[in-house]
Length: 85
Image (tube, rainbow, N blue to C red; front, side, top):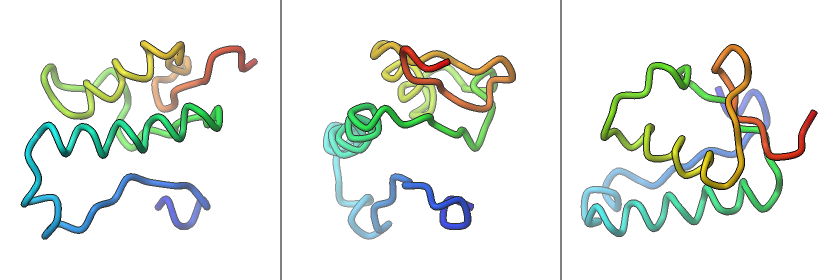
């Protein structure tokens, strides 16, 4: 889906991911998120924000973005950067 949209996505080969600790996984994920934030990217969510499970990686990503000033779109399918109309 991201390829068809010309969008970037977080992707690490499974063989590498499986050898990483949770701290290493979050550090890699956070680096990707920080790049999207630095670009002021709008984040298109594969799952609506309201469906994020407490304690999940997805919930952690949402909270990270929101801590950087991002907010959910009215329908919960995107994260809007701070200052965007």
